[in-house]
Length: 394
Image 1 (tube, rainbow, N blue to C red):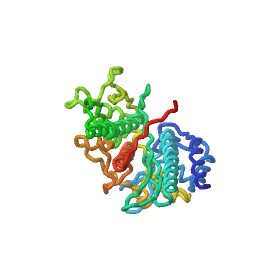
Image 2 (image 1 turned 90 degrees about the vertical axis):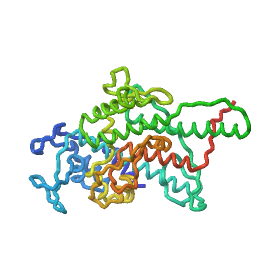
Image 3 (image 1 turned 45 degrees about the vertical axis):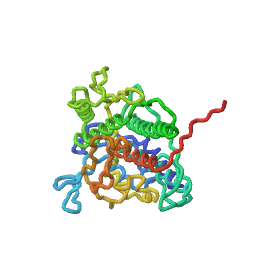
Image 4 (image 1 turned 90 degrees about the horizontal axis):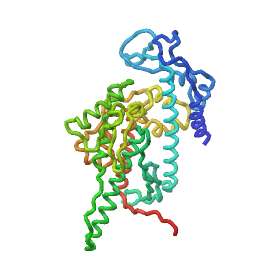
């Protein structure tokens, strides 16, 4: 428990770390462009809580480590005939790495807590995986684990300014809406038919096209930030979406809209089952990146904190936890083909990546979200469902 409090305290204190140095780092740190912590004592306190040194933490936050087969000044020879190049970062870049570190630490604590709760609820009979509900009962029969899961359905979101987060949430909502339409309405119609009860033809809005479209938008976002990691990446993405799915495209998508206000210069819209929602594209690529830099992954992998050492899979994911410290993730693309999108729409992943690919690398936020959603839908499809309507007292 004390180790857990230390990690949570580090998350809180990271929010108090500020950086100086301006937003235009110079190639020569002597010119004063490199980011530096304004309060070194506060940074040292965070480092102590995480079980690392202040120098290592400052280096991971204020510099970017690159590996290249070349030589020159300010470079240190590493194994394998390569050299390490340390590029200074600006104050805003260092702040972004600080926020990413705090996010990963807090998310890791949350995943650990879910795993511990699931383990306790299962009677100690198995590990705890999240995915829409807590386990209950650890009986095993025929190799299959038996349990009870409770699904808290996502709420549909449409704000004055909707962004990347709302697109992910509405993807989950569309997927669950499609699932329940098929299982509840379809099941009732079949039951009436089996009982010989005449029923009128029932129609409902098919969410599969919207799920397909959102999956393609997220895949395009993945491609864009990997190919154009600059300030113009969001506009590159928007132009690509308009050209591929908009009204002037060769095959316009029936659920894609170019908003009238602004002419689609900064946003696009998706026709959901509930209503049409415009999404501001600003920040899409940056928010989708999400993963820690190699420097921070190396820092967490080598930290002396027992809790960090024992929970690498919750912090860095299974792929990075399996890698030996210092090994860089491969940069190969592992996106699965979307095809016509029907199977992906029914799975709810919009073309989720295949985690078995040998080319493992840090997955984007959208890939992680779609993989988690696909796992949830697989759980819903594999178990027996009982829908409980809300009961209100008279």
